[in-house]
Length: 281
Image (cartoon, rainbow, N blue to C red):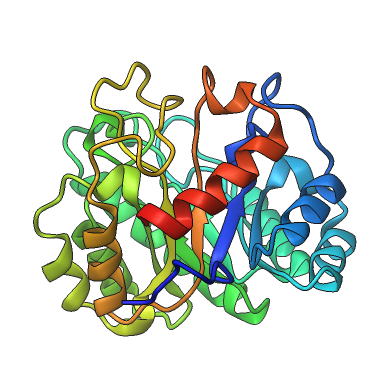
């Protein structure tokens, strides 16, 4: 397992940690402010959200690389399933944005169950069909698609994939080289079968690894994640499972925290992340 105690070049910031994924939260920093602050602290990469990027993908991507970092990813496609599913044109637009940024991975949160269905079988069929349809276009654009399984508490309205094994089964069925999974501590920390599921997968199926923590008394299913070290997730054991399965990429800090971290000064948050990454991750 990699040693981060004296080197945090593998550290990436997901800008949701500063509240930039939702209107009305955070300090409202521009992408340029985020880039400069991360570069000054030795971060290796940044992951943006589509709402921040708009038509400025090429410009922002070039600014990141000029600062000595990489764009590790873009969040996220519109939902592919459920009542709030986006159109094919909207999904292709997200792929185009990732390509313009030079993002390594476009994250996919699947969306909930298909209207009029029960259980997950029909929804997963719909997901597989739509994802297979977009895989070739994404490959042509040089974009990898990372399926992110979510904690079961978000099943129904936000996801139809609740374990790494669920997501890997979809990847295997489609069998496209640019489709893999995103492993997020918040969503997988409880899964005792995670190491076995990851080891059974091809090494190149793990496309990204997201860091945060699960608070023992979380107050909101979506917006009360913990900073690393503040919760009960075994962070080093999870990273060992991910890296034992072949992952050697960036570790992306993604903390949704409306009542705590999003209310703190961004510079303070960025400093805390570096310290926690070196000491507890």
